[in-house]
Image 1: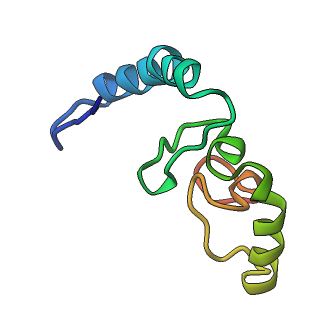
Image 2: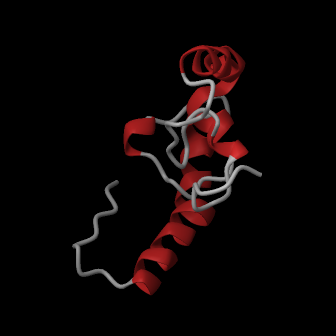
Length: 95
């Protein structure tokens, strides 16, 4: 299954599709693949609130240590990257 959107897609249509994916499609995938399955973070859902478990699982603590070693000031952040939970939703301020 592929959910594609042209650049001209309205934000309301995109938001609806994102919500539909999170509430209808993703649960179906997890029912088939199992809750231990992980996602491919290069093409991820930046609105996924459970990104730590979905994309990193049990390796998250180790990855946090590595990030702390090489990026101790959290200069490099992405919405679902290691350490993103320490920033607000806009990536502007630490929470």
